[in-house]
Length: 374
Image 1: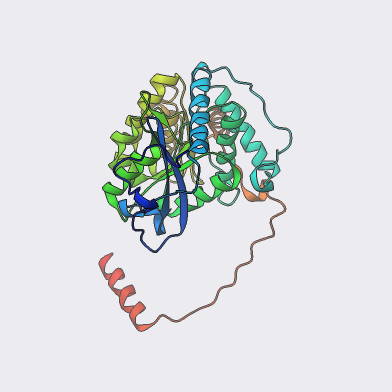
Image 2: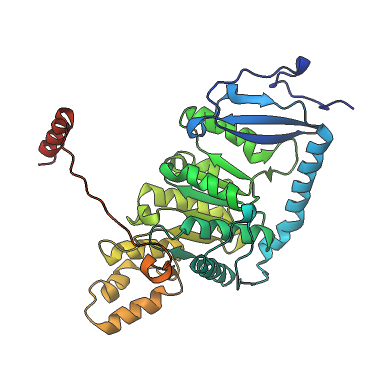
């Protein structure tokens, strides 16, 4: 039995040789690629900021091809078997009384479990929602465990799209790896640019050599900028759930990010009937109710179609009855908790203020910025 049945020309197979690899490797990601009757296993060695290039792919010659084939076949059979269920909308509707034990012996806090159940209830009732907990209460973990529940308990094989700021992409990758067994694709490559992302699409998006395009990953994490640049490629995938972190970026109606997201969401809606949109923000209402309407319109355009009517009703709240009406309107779609109400075990915050004199260079920059903004 040969270790690889057939190797494509774009890999150096002779004598077990591998491509040259750049030295600053940080994280490794294994990729199994099917080519007709044969399979190639390669390792993508991710550099800082998940940089990808053609020179950062190496063959893994020590893994038996039969094991790789079995793993690929299991994934594809699961996708075939679960495809009908994912489209049917018949769910178990089971919620949690206590936290289950997640990967790495992780467990949810009581208020995080409540948040998980609330998001799942929204999903079962085919309702998109906004998780607006105060920063520090674990919004990421609540969303990650929601996706994990859909994957393991409801047997929804994804795909799940997660759009995040660049500064949090590594945090999301770490939480997905620490709490779930789902395959995660980090779709971001500032070093390689468009060619690097094309490499990711070629080797990490689909099993190759099949008549039917089978997606390899369950979750894909990308950034706002990459989504805007590659929205046409991302639109080719019917996303089951779309998560937007720091969703206050969507407050301005009609901006470029909102337009690209709307284009990406269309195929999933047409294929599944219901596609959950899950927004995360610690500040759902900051300046005016128009910004709040923009978020509500994005998740539920049919229920919040007209900004003028919403603004007329809630734009200038003067009575307690108006507050209660707004609360009733938001309750099915928005969950907001603050630390002092739910995280009573967190010690009180202590602040130590130390005055430090600016250096000469800092004073120059400070003066330049001050003069520019006058």
